[in-house]
Image (cartoon, rainbow, N blue to C red; front, side):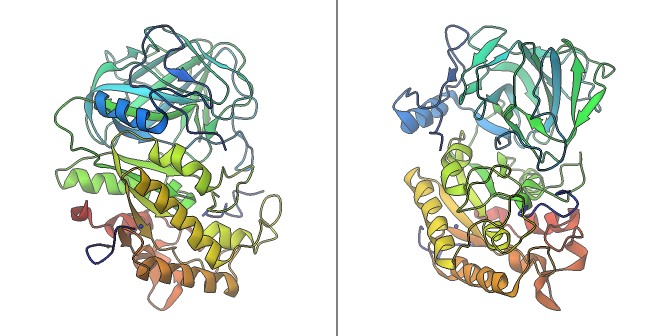
Length: 447
């Protein structure tokens, strides 16, 4: 449950399982783009509209809110073979995502954050999903970027499309299709999609059917957001960002079923008659205090870019730290153990995220770290750190509220272990039932 009121205004793979293992500045973006093809694309470090304050003001003026999101990552094969390392050339990539909030207009956000060269997007469409790689007839909308059909995103940059009329409901799936003509080189992507993406040779951005899309992947490429607008009044800053590692990312949930805990949380808001943006900004393997080549920039660096640079966000649920503890104790970690971390360092990192959020007027809900006894990187010393960090989260009063996910998932017979009914099998990651229990532990009436 979330507890607030008495709290002052101050909130793995986590581990990649054994089966899966065999600071850029914030980038400004503008609501719809204007002028020529590059008008909505910005290189790292460019300043528009007064930096972060300007970005926030532009978003507010546009009345856009997040429908779906995924945190960008550098190309890597640590999770297994994917398309990120080779990139694309004369190929179409089709990606299916479910939006948590609906609207009458839609636009997409593309990221070349980790690209070594400019990325040319030859064309893009958005449509309502039918089944697999097919889309609903009559729903295909050509996307433009600053009124042009194609666009180039600078290395390290991000890009928003213009808005297009497409009425979508909360919890409805949309399909975004990108045609990449020129060779891209290694691709900025999101490794652990828990959803199927599709690829075809040649230009098939406007296809309704699925016949050309003969290759599949379980990652997302370049696509980092789908935003919606219109369709009714929207409460100011009612968006929720779930920020964390693989337990937020949804490792262990059933592919193509939207059963990660943020997905379930979005369903709870919708069932209560209050659908809202619930955006998943988890990265599997991510840490609070260490950046790694396969698992993303450390949380204290990426938090502004991934959690706070989001339209209409008002709350962040923070669940991170188990990888800092476990990977520092584990010789099986990719690249070897990461530097040892103390409880004091973990607390300092969480305080820094609270400070960043409060500086933007965003509240932070602290989530206790879930049990991991029996996991590949479990040690008694690590458990002592987890318990100490959880005690601080519960009692410090520095968060705007807490959600006790440790309590929600723990085995009553052994509080250090995830309950068997919630265990994906590696004693660290929840299964579908466990992710549902996490979402149910959040008090939606407190938002």
